[in-house]
Image 1 (cartoon, rainbow, N blue to C red):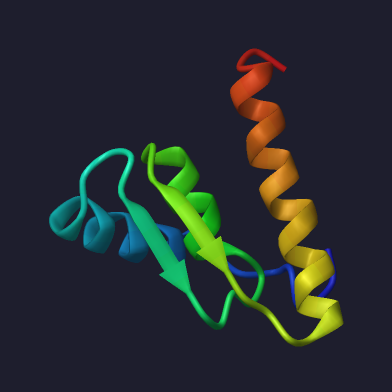
Image 2: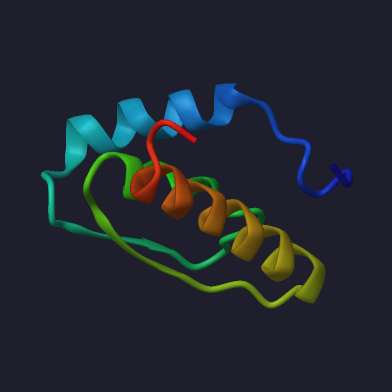
Length: 79
């Protein structure tokens, strides 16, 4: 993993607490600074829809890979 992708699960845990407390499944979560996609990943795992905006191409590519891996886990849960 690159430095951009090497974020820990703690950031996902923090986001999950915030989303669970402040939104319901199928709500839309907006992240205007998507970074490596933590918001999108957590929103997806919690059944929220999401919109992410990222200007930096390196972070954008990292977010795409991270989000795609979560989507594959949902399609193939035992893989």
